Length: 308
Figure 1: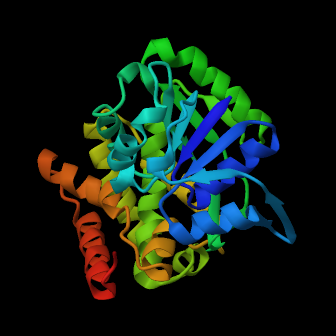
Figure 2: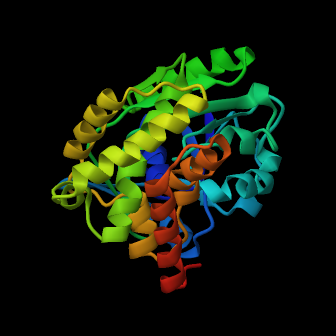
């Protein structure tokens, strides 16, 4: 299967590495010059615990993407999704499927502006990864991937992609309700990503604070209320258990928003997590004070750091 991974950050590198190791033809697409140069010169290096490995893998800039592929896996930042799809439209033919595995909410609407619904596959993953330096990714923990074709005509290829990912050790499955899983993951990220960035701490440090439970439960309550209006039922007690179980598995991890904002002074995806809930809350007349404040604090920090 010819696969292009649009967005070769931490997660894009993880998936690219694991898929390449099992014989898939993978091309990474990214816009970070130092990262591209390092991988082109030295290969992609991955660090997994005490083990390291290096593979040769093709990486190009979006404007260099001209060869048609079977599947595009989108791992851009949320705010860059539409821009990336526009730039790589030459590789997307009438049968190319585009799998979205981005953090956050509202991406199907963005994809529909660039890709026919029959070619859209929505997915969610709870794998984690990080970038140590250009060309070097850190893997850690275990995870899963769920996906669902947006249109019945795409089910067969989506299930074929599930098999490909499963063989790569990505624990993939076909879902009949990926919107539930997407909202559930967004809720997890809504409790961890921005809080770790605001407090400049890893997940374990944040969840060990005396105020963590009160903050987490309020964020969950706001996600639950808005999700219900969006046709997705999240049980608050089950959501709490899921959040705390997830946090215990990756206590030493600095989430992507911390990596972006604090470590690399880049814009964050907060508008597609807590910010999305705050916007929808206003539309539905649902109070979302924590999500609103979190979003404003992240944007304030972006201003302070003069992010680009």
